[in-house]
Image (cartoon, rainbow, N blue to C red; front, side):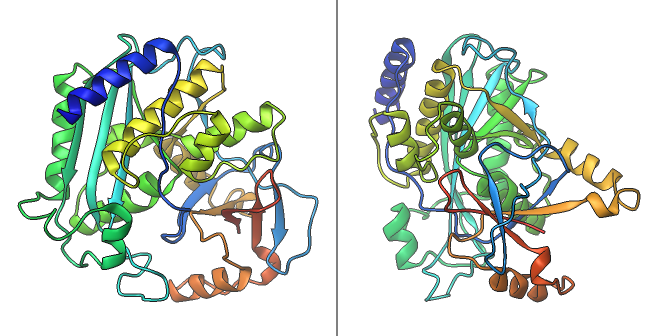
Length: 345
């Protein structure tokens, strides 16, 4: 019944060109996702501050991105299907430490497939996955609503991924152009690759190209001259786009719907969107090894907002990386002058 209600609501909202959203996941604090970048022109409105805290005039390199649409008027897209998704994973309060930031296991794998040409949602799914190494803490249950009882009879992450691939075939997306959409980089650049690697799985190719909703919204606000508006959390994105929030907070399937509605709103406003192609990005980065060593930079994304240069240095040492001088680590600030959860090495 809830699924039917969501579909009916989505049809009305999409037809009317409006969206409804709800509060969503907290600021990214699950650790740092390594992202290869190239020395391209800086992202407008960004600034970097060395770990020592002194402002500098340089800007961070802009990662390789590819147009997600054939125009900027909100009508067309080069993609046939959007895969709007959200994952929830085991976690704990940083001070408790029972589940470390880099130990989270996906326990909810939710997605919505949106047919761009048909303007409809032919499939939505919510898969619960049993964790293998970590437990569902009290904090995790309070945040996501997922408990041990919820996971009784739950499947596995490999089964959830297989279900997504079957759904794409069932809706006619096989062989078509697909692009995922996620709120931030943690889902598709940190948690899913890490979980898949631990299980000996490959990330589906359809999930290796994606739109970062958070970045897309921030870029849209800059283009609109609204640099003072913060758009990191889903609530902030909702406020920035002036849309109503609905659904259960921190529920993966509800977040997936909100991602879709937010994307629709950006398209309605003619926002310029860019698709991050992780395979192409990595190939370009590795190709430069040795030849352009001095020009290569590594971007860490998904850092805690309060992370300092010293924290990053410690993290690198713990992961067997060479010790870096503080002048080689830059904290990236957002257009509002606050930490953006990114750093450049």
